[in-house]
Amino acid sequence: MNDIMQRVLKSSLRWHESTKLMVMKKALVTGSAKGIGRAIALELAQQGFDIVFHYNSSVDAAEEARKEAAQFGVKAIALQADITQPEQAVALVEQSATELDGLSVVVNSVGNYLSQRTSQMTTNEWHSVIDSNLNSAFYITQAAIPHLKAAQWGRILNVAAASAQNLTARDLNTAYIVAKTGIIIYTKSLAKELITDNITANVISPGIAENSFEYDDDWEDCLPTLPAGRPAHLSEIVHAAWFFLNPESDYITGQVLEVSGAWSL
Image (tube, rainbow, N blue to C red; front, side, top):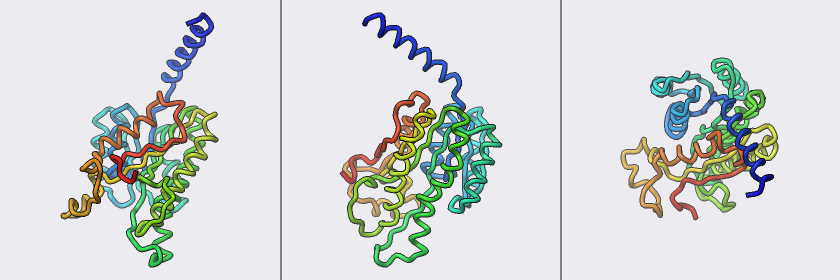
């Protein structure tokens, strides 16, 4: 290695180490009382992030998750909001930033699912799915961006769905996939715009997970044929999320990572 390359490498390493020292570890995870959101929020707490657990109606589950996170020695709070309503979404972000004294990470994991034939879907059903899966992420992220810029470092992570990048016809979940495909386009657009602000924006796209049918007694009979022979463990989805949220992933943005065990390929 010549002298010039050595100097460039040493300078880069010094810059990287200095920026790591300045990273603000303050995170809001929506839909984090249960499931994927909860698992990601707990991982962030274990990694030393102060964390806001968001919930809409699952107050007991959110409080249990908050208590578990607090055991890692971080500040953990639970806040309620219906983030399909823009004013409540903005209020949640502002309260989160106030409670945590800043905000540098936003994870959008809220999203309900509807199985309904496309031609039979009602207007209310359409709006409910789009509001939950796409509009809520837009409201939260747009409100959070000024705080991430103020932190001079940030991560935006949105949760889509396996195969949402595949523009194919759907039999029963058209609105859901429309919303998740929208999430991907929105995230990529943010990634290109915010990279100069040291903010990355990425997507994880889970397939069938171990909690997907947690409320069904016969959940094993509901599983489609999976190439991996099993659903994803939440820990595997969390591993993908942390790959993007890690402070060392500064140069990875606008990407979609499926965690689906080859399902939908």
